[in-house]
Image (cartoon, rainbow, N blue to C red; front, side, top):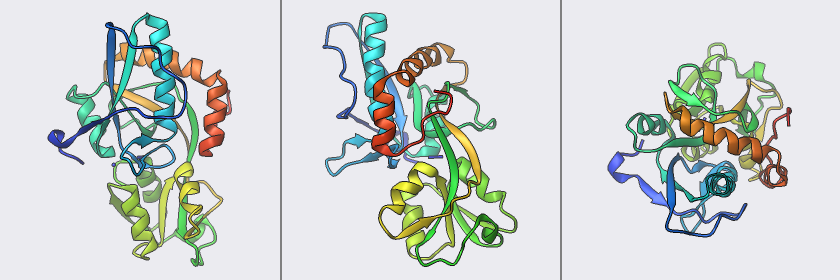
Length: 255
């Protein structure tokens, strides 16, 4: 995926999410900062109150509980809002501990990768009145995708396509709605979310099959070890199935 805000403008947003309850507060508290780009519903977005909501924030709430129980101290996972393509820079600069925003594996990203926690794919979204009927029809068309996301890489694989990268998924879909592009290449979960509006339709064929991960700074294996323990517990929980259904996202086939 999914997203460039200057460091001085990054804001911490409190967790106000549906999902697992966290442990009671105590004097012993550990904080993990989470870089997140809330323009990628249903993974993460902002509601009218400015709270970050979605599958990933709800999962992080569960992780707070798991870590608190595991280590006997109260864990807080604080959301730090930023553009998607700035998350890795912030990790490298030690401004955040982990990044989560529908990340899919890309060997060019020099980061530590967690175990996967969701299934995913890159698909084409088109205006509802488009005559594009298959991925073959995308050849030579103007495509838009999120800058730095695997959707951009998938778009560039389409023969003779004219590919434009934009930072924000909302801007991508607004541009598609205004017929500035023939199709947008986005994550399946995001595509389903926008198709519900009635403005768009989605091609059934996948351009790229993948999975979603959490990332950390290259070399920070300790935090990834903590995250992987949480992912393992989460995948085995009832909360995982409930949240996948709630947000219409694809559970891992290996679960």
